[in-house]
Every structure is written in C-alpha cells, then in structure tokens.
Image (cartoon, rainbow over all chains, first blue to last red):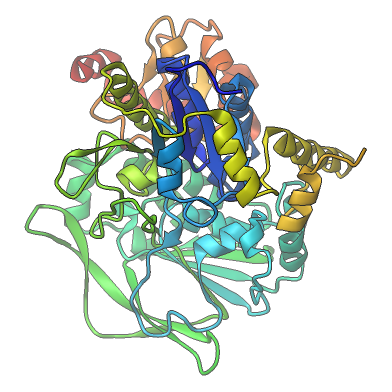
Length: 464
Length: 95
C-alpha cells in the first residue's frame, strides 16, 4: 500500500557500515522516515563482512547492532541490486525523497611502478575480499607456493594480510575465513612475509593494537632490524613534540621487537622493514622479486615529514607474491557528480554539490565516498550523524520536492521487473541463519556462503 | 578496580555517552580524537558502574580482573594514555 502522503522515503545506496550508521542516525533524527537499503551483494554490512579480518571476530559482532538499529526497525533491504546497473540514479530520484550514497571506495590505489601488473602482484584488497568470501573474488587463485611474500604498505590492511599469511591453519580454521581460502592457505608454503614501509617507524600507519598482534602470533617470529628503529632527528623531534599516543606506542613496540632474540624454532617469520620504497616488481612471466630503494626522512615546505630516496643502491628481494596495500580509492557513480581529484562525491557536510557548487536537492553522501578512505568503523557514526542532520534539516525546511512516484508499491513493482532475484531482509535472515548453523556444527563463528548462486539459493524461500 | 578498553575498540562513542563520570577519552571534538586509534578509560576516575560495558557494541570493555590474556597490555595502556595528559587538561582542550 502507498503510505499516507508526506512520509519521506529515503534510499541508502550501499549497506556497509556507513550506510548502516546513516540509517540508524536518520531514524534517530526523524522517526517517521522510511528507509530502503540498496546493496549490490546478496548480504549486507559491507567491509564488516568482507573487509574486517576473520580473526577479529569481536569487531564483526557489530553486525548485531546494525541489524537491531536498521532492519529490526523496519528498514527494508534490497540486496543483489546494483545501482547504476539494475536501477539508475534517475530511477531512484523518481521514487525517493532523498538518496544517500554510501558506496565506499571500491578500488585500490596503484603504485605506478614497472611490473605492478605481473601475475603474482595483487592489490591487498583483492586478497582480503578473497579470504573473506566476497562472491566477486572467490575464483581468484593466489600462488602461495613461493617461500617469501612481500607486503607493501604500513597500514592495518597490510597488517591484516600479513597475519592471514602467517597464522597457523588450525587458528584460521577457528575463524569464519572462506573455505576456499582456508584450503589454499593450508597448502601455503610461505615461510616469510616482508612488510615494506616507505617511511620510518614513527610514521607507520598501523594502529598499535595491530602492530602488537603481529608480535604475538603463535609460532611466528617477528623480526625488526635494530638499525631501522633508530629514529632520524626530524622524526624524533616530531615524536617528542607532536607525535600521537599511537605513534609513541608504535615506536616503543618496534624497539621492543628489535631487541628480541631470533626464534629459529618458529616455522614462519614476519620481517618489518622501514624506509624502503619499491621501484620495480621483477619477473619474466610472473613475480620473482621486488627492487627497493632506501629512503630518508626530509621535511617538506609545509613542515610535514616525507620520505625521499637516499642513494641509488637497489636491493632485490626475491619473492613469489606481492600484495600492494597502499590505500583504497572510490570510483565514480553513473549520474552523480564526482570529484576526480579527491575521489569523493563533491559535498558539503554530506549534501552532494552540483557543478555550480549548490546542493543537489535530495542527494547525499556518507562514509568513504563522502570523506575519502580514512578513519575506522566508528568514524562513520559521526560522519553519518552529520549527513543525517543535514537531510533531516532539509526535510524540515521543505527543501526537498516530492518524488514523481512516491509509493512503496511503485518502487517494488519496478524492482520486481528489473531484479526478480533481489534479496530482502527475510532472504538475508535465511542466509545468516544457515551460515551460523553451519558454523555451530564446525565450532566456528560462521561458515560463509561465498558464491552468488549459493547465497541466492539460501535466500529463496523453501518451496511450498 | 577499573574498567579498561581493549584493542578491538572501533571508536563508536556509545561508551562516552553512557559514562556518568566522563572518564572515557578522547571525546568526539577533542583535539586528539581523530588521531586516537581507540578510546581509553581513566583508571583514577572510573567508578566501576558497568555502563560502558553495556553500551559497547563490540564488547571491547572489560573489568580489570576479567581482561582476556591477549588484551593484558590494555590495563597499562589505558593508564599511560592519561599519564601523558591529565583528564582536566583534556576536558579543557575539548571545550
């Protein structure tokens, strides 16, 4: 039935953390709005499901809050529906009072060095999606037969993939890692993972929690060259005067790691190396090694500390796998303005701006597509609060015109025609229950279904 | 005793809202909030009321006698955070 006139209907595009927080904050600001969550996967919660590492189950528990704050409060889910493919931005504007984009940053930044695209060199984000059972990545085949892997980058994604490459198969088997990944990682012959940071220990982007974890994995030696943790005068001054609590904790941890004795009884080893920039990935047909140059820290004109090549001595690190973890990047959405320089939707506090700089009525952004790929999960809550407040204000002031076809049954009819196999809340609940039940049987948090076919079949109501 | 926040904190600020004595920092809006990787509980101020435990969506808060072994470091870490700068200073700069 069409709701009584005046009810604002909002489409949120992307059911990841930013979309979930936005739905929650919007319902708190305006209890009377109706929200539909559009999601291109058959499952909600985005990177909480497909990004957060399987051995970080505490964090994945946030899905219960998301569920309670959105789906349990009447938000509808349209999973397996891709905006821009199955339904356009213009379609959404015809049916909704407002559209909130929460599509995140769906691709990775590139290094821009020769050999980057050789087989065996991967964006770390694809490895993450693969081990987390993202259906678009399950067919990838990572060659884990070499003795050494190199991870480029010093952030939490780099730490996550390093852990996944070194955790024992028994530990992995207690997580919700995708079955295909568990099988492949069981056969892995990788003994050493070298993690390269182009800056120094004081500038490493790891949280100290992730760094500390790398130092306490069972059966894994962590090696840091004592010379690498001697800070240059610029970094030392920065750390003393301006450094964050995390940076100071990180440097203290790294110094502690550097003092550790070798642990030859360990079957795997993590080597953290700093002030090294990759300049070329080498190999005839696939990755055989990576060339790195040494850096030094210099002060930029704006006072920031940057790495700069110090000399021309190239060191080659032999390896069979390279995971590049240098950041995410957003992609443009059809029909919506895009800032090609900062890779976000041009916006002011979440109101998307047209090319003349004025707000585009009824179009909003939240999360990484609004502010860029920064911050942690909870950052999205404040971000969502800001966007929700703007949207509520605009509703209040009557700035948003009524859509042409405001009825629920009208969008439902369109979706039934365009995407008969969409996944609703009930479908997702069926998937969730099946995965949790399988998890219980295997004493794991859940066993993920990781192909679209499996997911869609689990979501379909049983015949009869 | 005191409660402590462990490394699985996602900086959801539900605990800050729940805390009756304002002992969880940095607070949203404080200068060091954005760069903080997690929130911390001031052990000298905490009144052991349990409100933050209830509020946390990822179960990142523990009573000091119940901290799991892998988060054992968190007790010192929470205290160290406040040793660097007092809560009074934090509250002033947050204003």
